[in-house]
Each structure stands twice: as structure tokens, then as C-alpha cells.
Image (cartoon, chains in turn green, orange):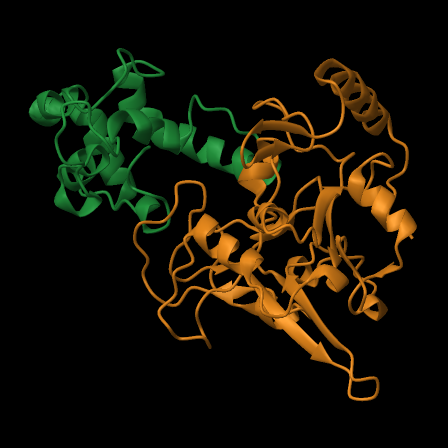
Length: 116
Length: 251
């Protein structure tokens, strides 16, 4: 199931344009921590690596941290003054793609869904 | 009675660095802003927790007031432990315990929380490795691997752990918590990693009680080590040989 979803993501590749425009205004920064294509395929690996280092070793680097992602992509106070999107709404940056590719996203059952 | 690690190279390096940094910033605790006191200079973000440090807490029960819940309230606020008005199952990271000695009539009040044991039974029994002890002695649950079996809750002699029974919303960004996992006091690891002190200690100081002292048990120059040298302190259930990081005086 997950493999199928990953294949779908790889296959679809750069065709996530369905919501690129929608998300453009929610990212506060100019540039993501890695290239967009790389992030689409590998963000989960980066996050998993970071989470283990943070929880077990107390490394608190910000580059690949979930909070870092959210601060930029899902800020609690969007710069355009709009309401922040909840994870259930599908408007949330993460939910936008995860709903589209039908990959269950359970980070936010525990983690705060919005940045600061 | 202090817990001293063998003098390893990394420990010596840490001490040397601490002395150097203490010299740079003018020594001791640094008040950055109201409510933000650095007991030590913050570790760099990309440096792992050091095995040369053993974080610990001293509770001076003589200074603890039985009707004060400052530490408990501060913990609940810090970690967003709101509860559902069901005391039997609501999450509780720190609680107040009132002890009465019928023979002497002496009443004692003290906070009880995860004792951050050097030999934690919760870690021994965890089937997935979710319960673990960090290099600096802080005992944590990796909720990514916790399956909610609650063996650790059974194993803990201090009843320090809670299970989350219901779905949660609006968690604090620094304290991820979710249904089906076990949790307990983290010594406010997010604050400690940033060079701060736990919320309960800060709250107790704010109330001018000063019953809680947090610091490095391995550093003979730390406030906590100096106090432990002077005061008669003990571990609770020392007979179990778990070598807790939390010590009590006046009990």
C-alpha cells in the first residue's frame, strides 16, 4: 500500500501542481531547506532521521525539524492574515498532498499541527 | 552519596568547557529575561546530550507547603495537560503527596514525579525500546515506538507514568502527546536542552519557596551538588537500588 503510494508519488513526480499555487502563499521563506523535487520524495526520511536524533540524543538542529516545516508551511499566523488551516480541512500544507495520494498522515495525532 | 560517573575524557572536556564558558559569561546562573534563567550555557543545537552530565533534582520537603500546587500547575500549563475531569485516568506528570506520621504527628508535603532512575525499571520492561534513558540521565518515552502496553506503568514504583486514553487536540509544539502512548515527567527536556530549568522549579522559585533545585549531579560545583553535600538527603525507596536522579530532604 505504502509502496504503491510511493510509486505513485514518484510516477506523478513534479505533477503536484494541483495545489502548488494554493500553498505558495503559506510558505513564509523564499526557499525550502532542499529542492522541491527532493523534498517531495524524501521529506519523510529526513523527518524520521531528525526525530530519532532529537528524541534519543537531544539534537535540536532546526533544518529538518517538523517544527521548522510547520513554522514556514503551516504558520499559526499566516502572513496574509488568513485563518490557519487545520489538518482535517485538507487545506493544511501536509494534508493537501497526503489526502491527494491517500497516504495516512499520523504525525499530528501527537504533534501540534501548526507552527508558531 | 553522590552519583559520580567515572572520570572519562569526555567528562573532563565537558567540565573544562563549562569552566571556560562560566568565565566568559561571568559565572553561575544567568538571568536572560524575567523567568528565563540559564543555569548553564545552552548546549549547541547540533551537539548530543552529554554522558558526562547527570541531571537531577533536589526536593526540600521542609520548604514545600501542603496547600501549594505551584509545581503541578506549572507542569500542566507547560505541557498542556488539560485532563477530562477524570482524576483516575487523567495524565499527571507531577503530583503532590501529603504524608502524615501518626507517631510523631509530623506532616510532610512533597511533589512526586518520575525519579529519572539510573537503573529504570520502566526501561527494563519495555518490549519495544520506547522507554529509554538519555545519555544525561533523563528517562523518556519515545512515543514513535510506544505501543501503549503499559508495562512501564506497572513496573514504576513511583506511579510516575500516565496513559493517554482519549484523542487530544492543540498539543504544545514542544510537548507532542497522543492517544495510546504512555508519558511522564521529562525534566522539561525541551527547556533543559535550551539551557533552561524545568517549569516546576521555575514556578517554585517564583513563589519564593525554593523547594526545588535542578542541576547536574556530576558537577561538584553545581547548586544541587553543593546542597546535597550539606543537607541530609535520601532517595525514596532507596531499597530498590534504582539510583534515582531525584533526591529528597526533610522526609
